[in-house]
Length: 67
Image (cartoon, rainbow, N blue to C red; front, side):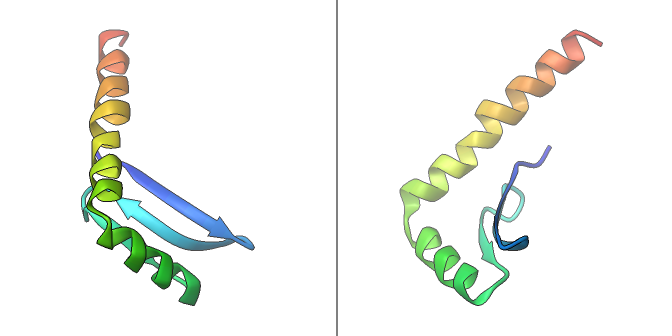
């Protein structure tokens, strides 16, 4: 299971957090700057990594229980 959060600006993907990579990646000039700043903040990275546990793993268990 992988948690992905993407941010878009003007229909272009600006940044993406992937739980398998464990950090933000920028795809535009501005997105690279955002990603670099967010990757410096351990609390932001911890919160994003926790979302896999809170959101993905919780909901997948519900899905399998109801299958």
